[in-house]
Length: 134
View 1 (cartoon, rainbow, N blue to C red):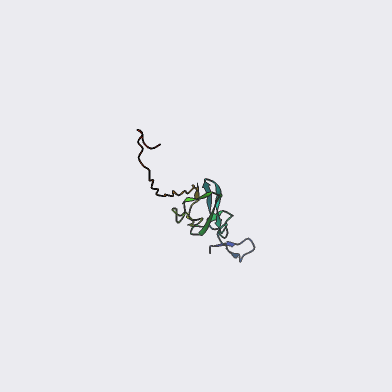
View 2: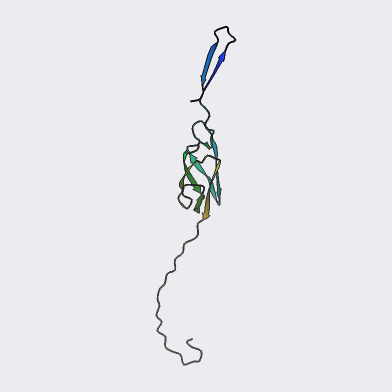
């Protein structure tokens, strides 16, 4: 813990020594949260590091992230996280010693269809007419 000390003789011949200890403020960095597509910006927990304003963190702070895509949308990818290739709604980031951006990309769901194949055998007698079966 830093200490500041000084000598003051203004009160007489003996003078006095003053000592003051203080706790320095931690360096806080902003975590910016963004998204593309339909959904909300991701949320961060905790909301801040101790001694920092909301949305700011000290270097090394582990932060849990949660994404909320709109109905009919899903996570395509993250940017600026521990696992950018994740398609989960949960992710994490360790705060660097600088302002940092985390973004989640939402992608619209596509309809899934299936083709059903039923083999059919036709037993048709050939026609005597030119041009085939009528």
